[in-house]
Image (cartoon, rainbow, N blue to C red; front, side):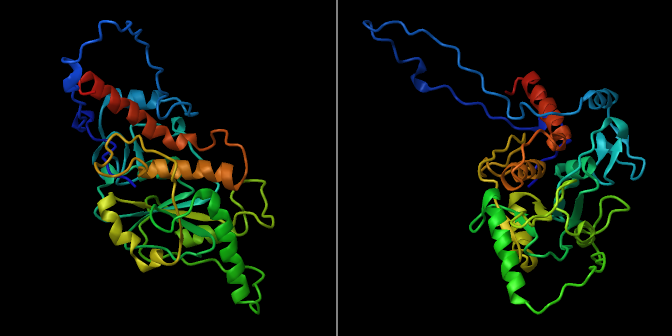
Length: 329
């Protein structure tokens, strides 16, 4: 989920300071007690430490130049236009491009402010594998090949997902034993009215058909018992807005829900009252793919998808530095 303006002024983020304990001035050490040697605490690793990211030189230079007008819509933007899904004042050659093992669909709430969404990061950095739709436009999905990442009752872990999808595929096959597969599946039509964020990209249904029986990684072929997953759906909205989308019958009963139960957000505008396991959209996409690589494909993760966090990490550092400079942290 995304609930903050990734391009908002850093000074617009509220950070509350913890009050000092009232016992600090009244408690006195025991006369007979030995002096306590104060030890420096071991510094915790930064939340985004260790990622293999492309250099941020291009973003640093763009920040120094300031906001520019988007050549398409004329909006004042920094780094990219979240309306047109295009780079602004940044060279395409200097921005990393990420190839994903499966397709990603993001269903955006119509009231979600584009400038508050981190979903655009995924679209710009992995344009061939990410499609953004604006609700109520939702493609038709095959329930044994697609999952919805969303927390709550009935959701399973990424590790449990493979077994559940395999069981669904077996049940679906057993329900229609007389149905003979066609030698070549017809190309699916594009979903009418689907909102696309970049020209030339097909609908979610077409993406699925084009991949055919591919497992999603070059050189990898399907084997009995392999994870049949082809597509993952994420919802992009504030948590208060999710009810309208998650209760849609096209998602409510059809798709297996997956929850990233062990991941914690480091979003700079995390919504008050929500647990720290509620992730920003780009965080959810990244952590799902990392877990999928290790737990489902049983392959070592070597940073293949780290650059999905390219913009996020830069903005995280930029905003926290601004908070520190302003004396608010």
